Amino acid sequence: MANNNENGNTLVLITGCSGYIGSHCVKLLLNEGYRVRGTVRSLKNSAKVDPVKILDTDGRLELVEADLLEPSGWKKAVKGCQYVLHVASPFPLVADEGCIKTAIEGTLNVLKAVAENGNIKKVVLTSSCAAVNEGQPQDKIFDETNWTNIETKGVDNYTKSKTLAEREAWNFLESLPKEKRFALTVINPTLVFGPMLITEQGASISLIRRFMDFCQMPATPPLNMALVDVRDVARAHLEAMRRPETDGERILVASTPSIWFRDIARTLRKEFSSQGYKIPRVQAPYFMVWMFSFFDAEAASSLPRLNIEIKFNNRKSIQLLGLKYHNVEDTILEMAYSAIEQGVIKKSGQYKSVPKKYQQEIIEEDKLENSRM
Image (tube, rainbow, N blue to C red; front, side):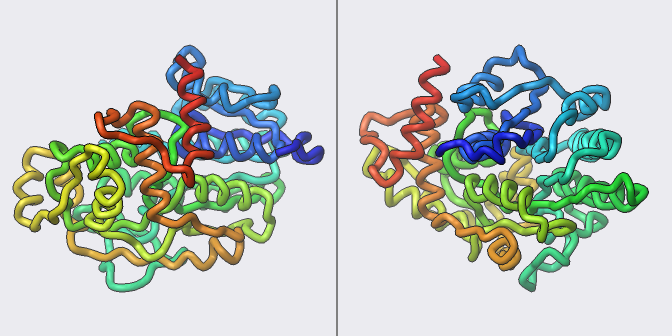
């Protein structure tokens, strides 16, 4: 896409630019002609830095070091920027209490730097659906007016981290004198799937690996999740950034309806069984997951969610952001093919190739991966 002259004069800070969502935000904004400054914890970490650098074809990307827990780096990071996409936040497979501290303090460190700067038009904050529907009966359709109840027994540390970090962001903005305030929009995505620009083993990438490896997942747990394509999440951040009608809004970003793990497995099995991959065919009963939970922290964290259908209303994302969501089955398959092409999932002896309908996106990512070697 040709550079837009107006966008080319706009500098956008993207925190956590080497992450799964952050890297797609970088790619999209560069394609839209913006100048991008991305933060990483260490410029010496080539495994994280190189995949992002390669996205820059004409010198509009700058990478700087900034640590979420170190306030000193953020004043420099936001200098000269018109917008901030605060994407950086821990998303481990199983979160400890340190995850809560990092999410809250990191968010406040970024927002304090923005307030002190005084020239930034808007911040778009990446939160999660985990800040919307957890800790309460799942007997309704959830929307942005709902908040997770972190006092409920069984609410995990990741959920607490996203809920508390988002609440602190809104509270911080409200506490500022009017002359210091800036526009804020919060994006609340569901479980993010889709093609990868990175190979780091976050929760989403690790999950697709489990589905594709019968030894890791011989049967699917009776779990239901709302998925969303990573490209739709990146688009949501961009549109929220440049649409003033989203100021002050929380926006759920989710493909609907939600999907059962057994249906994810069915989609993968239909595509990959003939290519040498053994994918689970049966759903595990509750007691089997319960027994496994004594030995596996992920299984333990899933127990409160078993046999519960999750329902979200994504109307606001369509109305305010103009989102047109990717087909969920395509999102699942593109993620799997992407993981295979990038070596996250081993190529089987019967593996064919990426189907033509997915080639433009996935082969492009594979070329990026090969150029790093």
